[in-house]
Amino acid sequence: MEEQRDNHSREGAKQGDRKWYSLIDKIWAKPNLEEAFKEVKRNRGAAGIDEMTIKAFESQLEHHLEVLQQTLKNKTYRPKPVRRVYIPKADGTQRPLGIPTVGDRVVQAAARRILEPIYEARFMACSYGFRPGRSAHLALQKIRKDLDDGYRYVIDADLKTYFDTIPHEKLIGMVKDTVTDGSVLSLIETFLKAGVWEDGSFQLNERGTPQGGVISPLLANIYLHPLDQAMTERGHKLTRYADDFVICCKTQKGAERVLKSVVNLLEREMGLKVHPEKTKIVNSRKESFVFLGHVFKPGKRMMPSDKAMTKFKERVKEITKRNQTVNIQQLVKKVLNPYLRGWGHYFGTGDVKTRFQDLDAWIRRRLRSVQLRSWRKVRKLHREMRRRGWDNREMPGLRMTAWRSSHSTYAQYAMPNKWFEEIGLCSLYLICKDLHPQRG
Image (cartoon, rainbow, N blue to C red; front, side, top):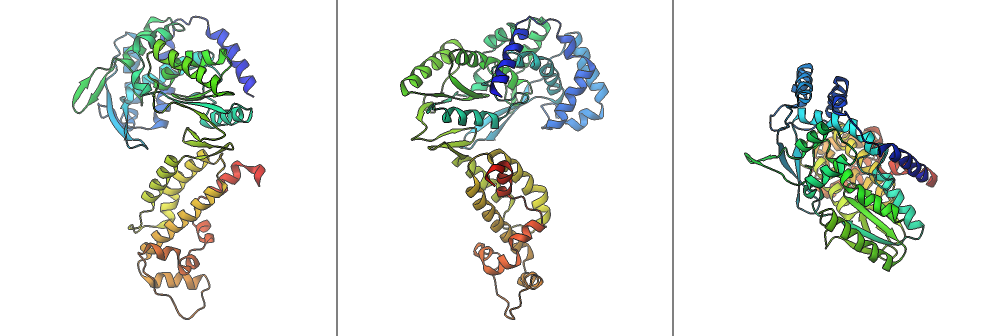
């Protein structure tokens, strides 16, 4: 399968080596703008600095698309600054995001739709992030295969604030190697230099592609393409997902030599910064390393990292707050299950059978506690126990708000595992079982 992808990439690269002209008319073509809006709508997202929502944009869709088309045609299109927001990271720091207006997201999506097929013909098989038909799971499988093949020394690399440090001139120069339509180059430059609106003031950005922009992932892949190319040509086992990458080597000395050449390429030639503290060489048979939220442990076991587990438990605790009075079935169906399914399918391909069973038991206990609190009166617990066949004349007294009560015999009798099946609770263990049919 990987060889087929390599062959496809090489064949496509021959086509991609040609110069591409007159692309701007394809970008502003009405059908392309319409499809671009559909993508933006599917991805949802907040309003930009003009406060126009997707719903408001759609209410006058023909008008807004006509305005975008005309400004692109007569070269008067100017994107608005992106709205700066911050989201918390697992390590306690904050990740800056730039939210373009809905109209600017439509134009970026329209440009990406035309440019992406051109670059897909050039991109290497070792790149997995934000590409059609590729995924984090494929990247993780590739690493596991490299470890199985004896490439035990792993360069665990980290680029410092990659998206914020990409030099604009060098990036435009790389795009220009393939795209010679001046209007398209100017359009990309306007995306890069749109600036940022934060705390009521405008800031010009001379470096970086704002995370949150529709076209930013494509531009980020374009800029790291020379790394993919150099490592592939030298026969190194690189696996990259956006700005996260590892390189697997057979010897410690080989890994040290490759790391030195990678740092030289990224820092001296490309103007990026390799994080000196987070970049290291790991002997995978003795030490662990983390990639895409998964920890690879000695013995080639793969499971959610400690940070991923902490974040998961915090989110589940937030959903199942024990001081709420709710309809438990609606809470499970509308809030908890969607989160469990997404998390379970992402991490379920690892060696997680026992861990998922333990998490299922913990989640059931959380929900028993919520249900006890929602019942409030102990007589409602008694009624449920009788309904399920409790024939003892003595009915228990129980503190309905105490955490320990959720682990009592009475709570488990009233709310057995079958009860969770009845209300449709998603099981992480069953997700894991579906993803590993060969294990039974």
